[in-house]
Length: 334
Image (cartoon, rainbow, N blue to C red):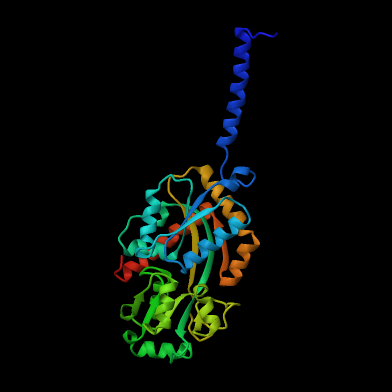
């Protein structure tokens, strides 16, 4: 029979302690990195700052679907946080400082809404992860609209700006608001005379157009794919420099209007997260960007692949923050 003396027991305990220390060190490095088995089991949250069917919703859910189907991480809990054009969601993001399981889809609309709602939860205070896409706006009308061309619309708008109701899926300061205001300026119309009506996302805007509650809608076209395809909505023009492959409509420049406008969307994390978590999120979205599912979503929605990450995206956010604030101040909205 072998008996352990005091020194033997100490040696064995020391050996076990070393093994445990090494194991804990390995676990401490676990995150959303792709070479870790625990990555597939990690649960993350994706917050979307508008209603289901809106542009942020389509973008966020397309990204989540690509990550889940390729097992880049575990299941996502997707939550639509509605209110004040994204300001409510931004404030909630700020309140979750340091949370290492939360991401939020956002874009140009959220940048402006924060200012028009008098909030200090500006996007430059969050942690920039990645810009995903950009897309032109479209000018939409119901199937039976008297506006058959962009020039029909422009003629009526110039004649009596207030008589043409224009709806957008974002609040003042968002892309659907900035687009008609800047277009009006290009056409010699006082932006303060524009009859703009706010809807909380593409879903409510679609209902307003189909119900003839407004004359014209201005928004990203990915949200109206079904209605454009079945002919219940028509696209008079798109605001980018080039035509979209998915929509049979001219650019404004083709129609003799020397003006272009591009919207964009990206992903933020709360402030105060660790550098390791930030890098893991960047890696996660970079791998998502390379999946066939994401490529399919880009093509299906007519989104322009405009992927940048980290500090480069952070610099872009600061520039956007300053530009939008300046525009809204001129309109007396910030």
